[in-house]
Image (cartoon, rainbow, N blue to C red; front, side):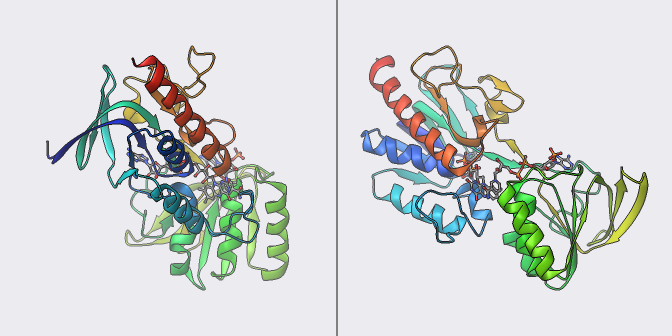
Amino acid sequence: MNQIHQKHTQLIIIGSGPAGYTAAIYAARSNINTILLTGLQPGGQLVKTNEIENWPGDYNNISGSTLMDRMLHHVKQFSIDIIQDTIESVNFKNNPFELNGQENYYYSDAVIIATGSYTKLLNISSENLYMGKGISTCAICDGFFYKNQFIAVVGGGNSAIEETIYLSNIVKKIYLIHRRNQFRADKILINRLYQTIEKNKNIIIHFDSTIEDIIGDKLKIQKIKIYSKKNDKISYLDISGLFIAIGHTPNSKIFSKYIDIQDNYVKISCNHQTIKTQTNIPGIFAAGDVSDQIYKQAITAAASGCMAAIDAEKYLNNYLK
Ligand code: FAD
Ligand code: NAP
């Protein structure tokens, strides 16, 4: 074990997305001694997007990183211990709960799991080989590297459509590949996609199509093989970049030995009438995308972070004694 410190606190919040930061604000205002662990992605998934239109009150093109920076500054107004650490394993058998981070070992009377989710991949054998060598899961982070080049985006949800619109102003040509013939994304984004196609004339949609292989010279991608269900035809597209935007998987694996998980999502509201964010273990709560199979929005993550902090406060004051 290479941990340097052992820390004991009343509440540990794992995650620094909208759920984690909101939980921290509410916990601090209840005078709960709290540590917030940021994980590898301070600010969470929203830092990957350059325009948020549905955060109430911010109607003027706020970027994801600006919004998350503002949440961080809000948390910093209170005496919350914010630590850049990633939890690798937990022991939730007894209270205080034990959390084993890369930097420290933690003991806590209550825990809020707000670990969000990570990007799903296609499960094609060459995918790992070309990750970072042409394959990306973040247009904002990597789009600029493909200036004036041919690229593809795969997916049909809000992320794929937003990334396509964003990349359309940077790259030469985009193939948007979706496995069905209807997008899942919000209507407003679909309309904007068609307006962008009209304006930039550099987006070609391949409906009913799947990526069968990613081909390159081992150093970078050169083409993808796609199968069209509609025509029962294989074709090849020459590209230097592939942006994967096919959804997310909850970060729940490290808790699965102790916590009830369903389809990778942490199960909440277990056996309790008035505490809605509690897991099957009293004192362990979950908030945000890690426990939300349906909504997966910044506002719902933040709202459930608030609920988890209120529930944790009830637990610490009433049930733990
Ligand atoms: P996340 O934001 O995923 O944060 C999870 C946090 O947990 C991260 O800080 C991570 O570092 C940390 N973590 C994970 N594992 C560990 C660990 N083991 N130890 C410690 N920390 C850990 N929603 C909207 O409402 N509007 C939008 O415009 C919008 N745009 C989006 C654009 C993109 C490209 C994407 C991908 C998503 C978008 N969403 C949007 C969805 C929104 O980002 C999520 O619903 C929201 O971020 C979920 O918040 P969260 O706090 O649950 O988790
Ligand atoms: P998503 O909504 O789950 O969409 C994933 C898309 O990828 C779907 O179109 C799906 O196809 C496709 N897909 C899934 N697995 C695939 C596979 N193995 N191969 C090929 N295609 C596959 O994911 P998301 O777009 O990342 O969005 C996640 C959440 O964040 C959503 O709740 C979304 O609303 C939110 N978000 C919001 C905004 C915004 O408000 N502006 C922006 C981005 C994200 P099917 O349609 O056939 O299932």
